[in-house]
Length: 286
Image (spheres, rainbow, N blue to C red):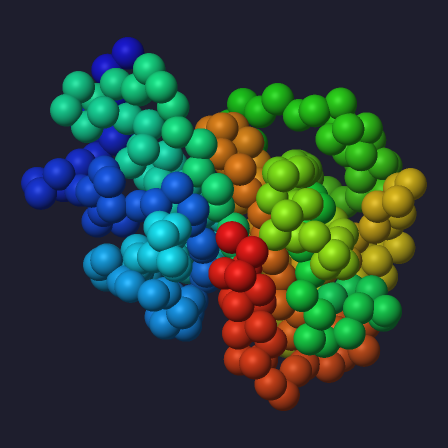
């Protein structure tokens, strides 16, 4: 089926609409970061940078670590941006821009998020590097996509729905990390379910001036337990990354630099050091 020009927008120079990238510009190993300034914090460890491109908040560097080609791209904040980045990354490798048709042989990317997060369990200290075993989305992104959860995901979702079912107008979704990436890049790291919120303040249980509609949200989150699984941390992209990677046939893992303890009301005084540790860990294992 030919994809309409209004559905897949290609710039006059042949690049994809938002990312401003050409087919062939991205490697099979992709690191995503939220902050555009963090792209350089990753690529400074490359042995050679092939190119740098950018448009809006989407900054991309592709280069080499030894003989391995790696891309790092900034997504900005939130799953609305993940929707853009993941669909366009997929289009770059799996759609023929000339014919506007999906390729017969599809490419599966290895996508690793390196991001910041806040712990919701008292035994997870600031400075921890944590791998997300699952992404639990409290946003609305996956209301718009058809997904096919595994039996394990379905079973875990029953427990999630039981625990959070009283919350009005929230339709959670859950997707597991790619097992290969979890057991290689995420090996020996603490693991847990990561909640992805649609905002930073009330949607993550923060109270500033506006009144929250869900009281004691952090207590509700950290009291969830199902077999060996518990919710460990909060952020704003992981669930969308896992869900769209699964829908599109890519492999994904989220590595979280824990900068805050939401139960102890503390924030790290050395956030850049913790993020850099997470970056170096991923690059050493990729």
